[in-house]
Image 1 (cartoon, one colour):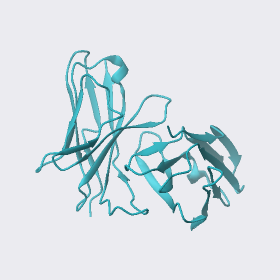
Image 2 (tube, rainbow over the protein chains, first blue to last red; image 1 turned 45 degrees about the vertical axis):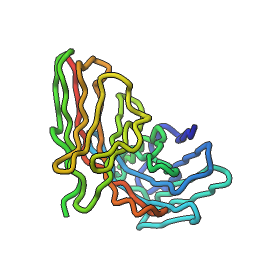
Image 3 (tube, rainbow over the protein chains, first blue to last red; image 1 turned 180 degrees about the vertical axis):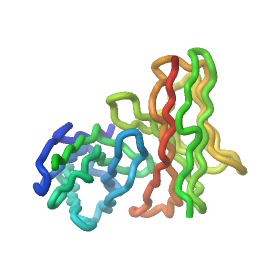
Image 4 (cartoon, chains in turn blue, red; image 1 turned 90 degrees about the vertical axis):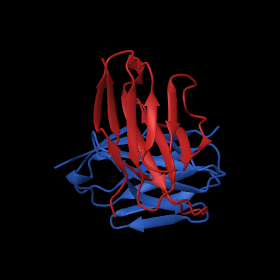
Length: 111
Length: 116
């Protein structure tokens, strides 16, 4: 059974800092891994999707890496801003299509 | 191209009543997924449907919960005889499912169910 863990559960940083969010999964037989952002009381916004054959994906100030063999992914956020404050979720997809989510990291970026 | 639509956004029910949650997938998407987010917990998969078919309901509670995705109209998640423990945010996602590794699920805004 696939289990996904995110560390830390919560993170508070001053504006401008670069930061790394971690995601680990127990079963490396995945199709892809997605990072999502969830604002309080809102739905999920997809940030980045990394296919199992890829090592990283970049979008603006975000960079996500994937090491399938070790069951790890990181989300790197450069030059953090208060608007980045949200909960960040990683999810892995195996054959069968369902996503298995981690518990999320609650990020607070202080002005 | 409108995104995934869910309604109602907020639903209040008393214990024992029925709750019906609706999801309209993105245009051109024929695959729908329901997830539940309990308070202070992560999202958990419930059920995966295609038009007129349930593909995987391994995450669905065995009693009181049912889901459908008819040929016409939205997907419906139905909870009978609700209990306080059903209070949660219910998210729907859809995909076109090209079968490939880049298949992406797009999420709706969720329905927040409160059981009094």
